[in-house]
Length: 397
Image (cartoon, rainbow, N blue to C red; front, side, top):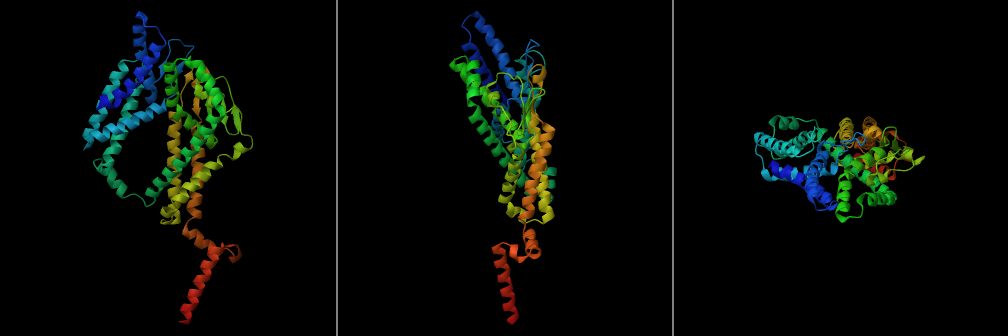
């Protein structure tokens, strides 16, 4: 199980690294030596997806620790498939799967560079496998009975809160994807120039560089989310990239960094975060039937809990999308985590709570009784008139 779930992903990265290395060197006695170095470099790159880092013998080049979240997602999907086929029937079997995956990760790290740079990947692999196994066991009814009993006694608003959080997270992901698409359309020229300068014209080197950039796309997506929220992100100490403010500085020649905004959106940047609130309102509107079945205070509680869940999730993703891409000021790269968490909670929470209140039947009933008839919607006036007619007919009878 461990060899299949961990070994194959490592082998994929190492083979690609060796192929790129061999393509850029001549087939000589030195090629065999460079192949061994390529294996160590491939292991270091593999560890980037799980908390490791790539270090250099030269202090001037610094450390690369910006996570390859694309590789992380691939590992999560592959582990899910492996655990599903293994079908653990009790927690002890799940624990054995986690231990096997961690053991293989330890063996993999032994092939990496000297020092502790790749070893955090062991903990990352163990955490991913443990989370996947726990979810699979719980879904199959073979998990922890205490957790099942707690869920059976959950508050009425707990399940709607999860539904709202899922909807708001989907809306936020879609909006972030649109931001990345717009940045790609605008910065395609800069990305192409940087890519051609690094690839050197070789097909294998070009393919390897493309795959490396694809592995960083989820990281860029989280940066786009932080930008959309209004908090922004940094690529180097002292830099800020936000809708209403851009303070740029020297950056590494990574092709994806060609997508960085060159200028703020002026006045429009101040209002852009409202798009997130509107997206949250749409998510709540699509789930209004669930919210309307609750009391108003429970609906608001569900909205608040959902906003808290989304904010916590975005905060964890922002931490995962932070790292270093070089020495000195390049050690500070990633979203403004705390600021992003606060703004996500406020923007998403306002949208969800507003729709939970405005779309609730109690609110509509209160509005019909409290507002003058002249400003009520025509449908409500007709409904009240029909109710009055029915009451008059009952009185005559």
